[in-house]
Amino acid sequence: MDKQDEIRERILGLKKSLNAVIVAHNYQRPEVQDIADITGDSLELARQCTQVNADVIIFCGVHFMAESAAILNPYRTVLLTEVDAGCPMADMIDEDDLREWRERYPKAAVVCYVNSSAAVKALSDICCTSANGLEVVNSLPNDEILFIPDQHLGHYVATRTEKRVTLYPGFCPPHQRVKPRHIERAKELYPDAVVLVHPECTAEVIAMADAALSTSQMLRYAKESDAKAFLIGTEEGILHRMRQDNPKKAFHLLTTGLLCRDMKKTTLESVVRTMEERRNIVRVPQAVRVKAKLALDRMLAVS
Image 1 (cartoon, helix red, strand yellow):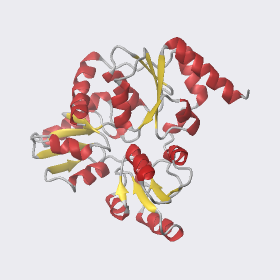
Image 2 (image 1 turned 180 degrees about the horizontal axis):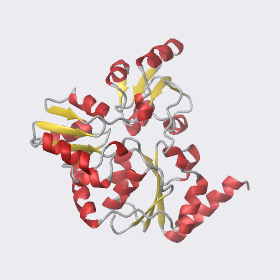
Image 3 (image 1 turned 180 degrees about the vertical axis):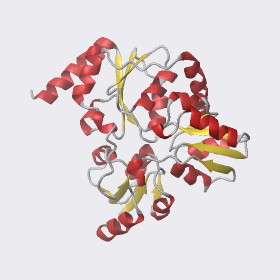
Image 4 (image 1 turned 60 degrees about the vertical axis):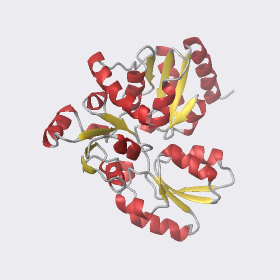
């Protein structure tokens, strides 16, 4: 038994003794995805964490995701595998920023992408993910929307609704890295490939793609499609599951550098240490948790 096999055995033993469930985002390292009980995008993980039969949730992802799990599961212990795994986009807005923007647009309903802190969610009317942004916006009675913090997902939604959408200028650095020239070059190499990009990409990139989808939507699309080759415009971690699910199909990133360093901080070693030490407990102050949960519950009710 090699070291990795030994660690996996320890994780399985600890999972049983802790009555724990391991959840991992689709961008995690392949070996981390493989030991998870649940993998998915932000929406899937938010849903499924409320349905687990466990005392402890081991969250392999970044801080805002583990916060959401803690908000939705106040009677379970949520452990984040790497305490400093954050999100550059989430850091682009805080409570003071949002209060200022709400004052500028007092009639607007605040739609908050889940890539945000619990405190920002608590000041928002409703949350959304990349999978349900349009559905959430169209569910609201307001004609005016303030979409935070991702300007690109917000623009994607704005072009598909009749509501007036004001965009906060946040963005995801890896997704903003994808450029139209990357699609042009990749299509020269793979002319028959289907181009799938994330709606966190720029409008110019989305316009050139065959579809703009959340990671879980990409996985379903690739599985159901008759195409044999795909060009992918999102974080590289998604390729592991795509190739597992579709061994006879080819998947290529649109460009190099589509890497979220925070997602890759979690390793098998950090998973086992987190479980052994019961470290990195995610706590959300009750006053914040109640308000943030309302925004998340509204989202889940729409979806």
